[in-house]
Length: 279
Image (cartoon, rainbow, N blue to C red; front, side, top):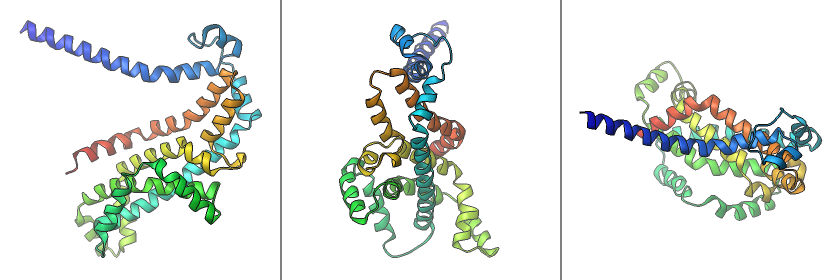
């Protein structure tokens, strides 16, 4: 008995030590970045950001956000991300509900085409998308939102359809008796019941849009329209020796998506776990 208890304790210690080391390796770069962003360049050169900042120096953030005009790129990213996620949620939820509940010719063929689109690497479609948007005169803001909305639809439709398939039809029959049409049933019955899946869709697509760099670098020709990621490359090139300013800019870029995840982590975890047990 003592042997098995000792073995169990040793196993737990080894397992938790391993998991803790993985967690620290993921968290340390973020804290190093934030810590460095509060230092002067001279203080950083003396310890390379390994020691805690002597004081919370906000001059780096003032120079990055106000003097360098990073507030404009931050606002651009917020607008692009919010607009794109709203479009994806509306279009994908309507499409997923239609694939799940309606019967029309070619339904399965169209759905499998969306699934096939998930197998194509996203960078492979950047050049055709750029050429198409250029021909239509939709480069910069509008083209970026449309392109990112299109790229997030396939996985979102698939995920939401999986959840809509599990909803009991008795609820829809009750709504129909109360006089609801298909659109009202989708909004009042379907959408509230797939909230966990919507949380996954929102976080997943917000992360994709906020962090997109390659497509943003191709589409945006004017700097004033650029999102954070594209502007960040130019800023880091201009401030190649000012490491603390670059870390402040990176912190400003990373914080919003972290805050979004913190607020929606319950829906995200619930959506992932519910999707894992769907049959």
